[in-house]
Image (tube, rainbow over all chains, first blue to last red):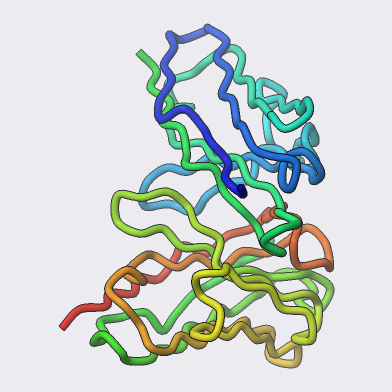
Length: 110
Length: 122
């Protein structure tokens, strides 16, 4: 079944490291590269990670991505208040012949 | 700097049609795949459709096939989304997004527009 699951919310304090996990299946994360996006309501989403662990220019190295099997993760180190946003993973899905987004994770900086 | 500007959103009755446009500037439009992604009120991001560097390679979310059509005009640097037989559940902000590559499916969307709101209601 094609679905990608993320925890609804995570939280951390300034300076802390947080990790957001994304669980998929063999047809999506298991066989295709994963991207991660940051989205603040009312603004355009921003690409943080592509190709599982590649950062576009301009994205701080505090953001890092990894993948293992049918799961992926986004780690944010040195947490800052401006990191408070919604985070989404996404991957192509071979069964759907399309793209599937995770449900999104709201990061709260306490 | 790459810029994307969506237009064409608005209020439409159930069963009606709407065509969204996305004007691109600041990059060689014809070299990159493009996509539409939407966000319904209170919901997450949902991929809608993508097109490769030519309109010959198109991809759609299963739930939308047959109602939505994506197309691009490389001579005018415009991406389109024709939406027919609209339903209340199509109400969302629709974003236009540029891919890092020429192929339509990897979700490596490195530039996004600000979005245009489509409201389907009687």
